[in-house]
Length: 140
Image 1 (cartoon, rainbow, N blue to C red):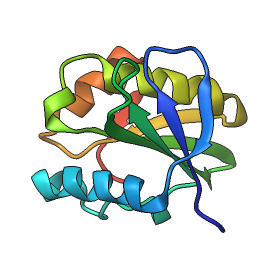
Image 2: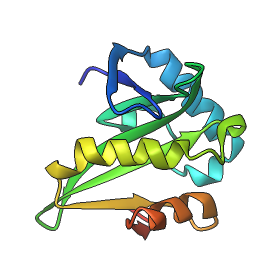
Image 3: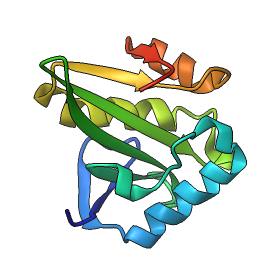
Image 4: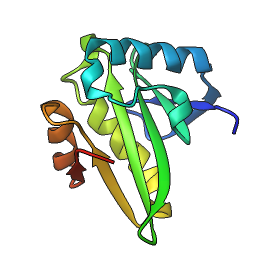
């Protein structure tokens, strides 16, 4: 499968269809992963996703994070799951919630259930999932 990324422009209603490079998404993911590797026990790279969106701040165009999507079959159902990471200097501004809401509008219709896989102790990700009404699992 070829990797592609779509730049998501936060605080705007549409997806910007111009392609972000794999290296940009991978660099952001690597930076966030290296902050707290225990929160990403399987690693965090573009290759683990069906699609990856680079989150950008609308007013500046600065890349501030990444949100990714993957699907799999389990017990006769199609399960969708996401990953999201926002760079430290952009946290607390609603980017993760907005990016996740946009991702779910784009992807969730194609699955039977959306799940959040969050490691125990990752309170920000647990709060985000719960605020979106998504059940949190701590193991695949």
